[in-house]
Length: 593
Image (cartoon, rainbow, N blue to C red):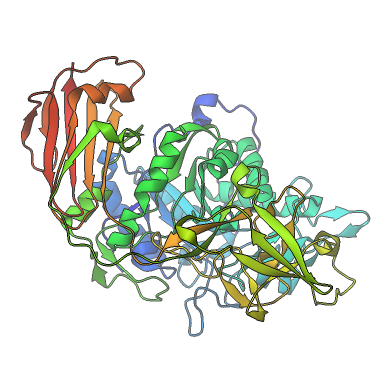
């Protein structure tokens, strides 16, 4: 998704939801990475129907011919834009009688009369585009507080089981509220028939509105809810309307975690929120390399393919993170930095794995003193061998200490926390309290009132990483941990395991990266990226290019052009070379033999 520009009765059932008489070709989706425009970077949560359709028109006129076909309303389209409302406010949302979010009619006037997004979707479709929306995990706190009944879409009316009607409080998991929107949404218990019925009623409604794309937030990365992802994927697979399924956010994503979800979805974020600063752009390269090396680019996905997602291109007129204001400033990225972020390839291999193939010429830069290092707590899949690194020791009869037993680089001392059983009285009413009896808090060794959070308590940008912070202890799955006999430390909120690493304080170093991909007509794309703070000459041997492709054993020469400058290129003496400006990119389109 990208930001290119921005300007500030009876229900209508558009599609049925059975899966009968639907061709496989119709359901096939995401054969290539979905591209389009998302309202978030320009409008935050405040976008209106008029503003959204204006921007959809621009996409249709100017970008559709270049493959951009999705326009997506980002989060909180159901929130009233009135005094006191903000991204984590409570009590300002519009919900229906079944606790489902519906568009705020003040901002989306065509939604009145129970029509939802049907009319907006129709207008978008008439522009030759696809329509998408952002949704959150589980159920809203507002619906839980109202204790709305659950809709049974298979039978009609309220969901009944065991001789009673089920309500929002029966399925909600308050201890698993979204870490960065704790007043907004919480997980539902997918082990309950009523919990599954609620989720099904949401996505069948989106299909009835004519939705083509769903961005499902606060369910991936450090906020992982694999049970909800799995169930929603199954619901979407059964619909006769193909809906592209995208996950967010992407903090703490690893190749192993990507493999857990790639077959269930079509897109999954692998970074935090992307804004217009160089730090966010530069943070993309290592995780992109790791996902490419794991063969995750274009892997099999839900009714099609799946793609790692580097978030939006923050170009054009933007707002600010967390702002209630619409577009009011232009992107701060330089032209070189935009070019570095822009190259769009459908399959890639990172040549940085083969450092001997790259020869870099650059001026020496003055270096300061030795960098300092600190502990960093990361999250990873519990099946990964590196997660098995925790041990416990008794300090006295009342206190145990848990430490990371694997050695840390740069001679850092072991990372340790104190183990404490829960000091909260169970209310006797929760059907899930048994889940927490074997769990404990991990408290700071120097402050017993502060407990370890697994997932960040605010939305992070791509350059930020704040997993493993301490905050006042509370009854919250994000602070509930279990030490397993195999040395893994699993968190109750995400189901991910903690590992301790050493991290360098301050800004990470620069360097170079290079990517290579083959086009559909056999052409070869090569990109050189200069992440350093000075102009740099980057080169590689022509013969090494063929090593990236299984079907090309030898390349002796190439000719073509460098895209940004338009200069013609002929490899001489077996070398492809370019002088690349700071934070810049050279992009070649070549015919090689």
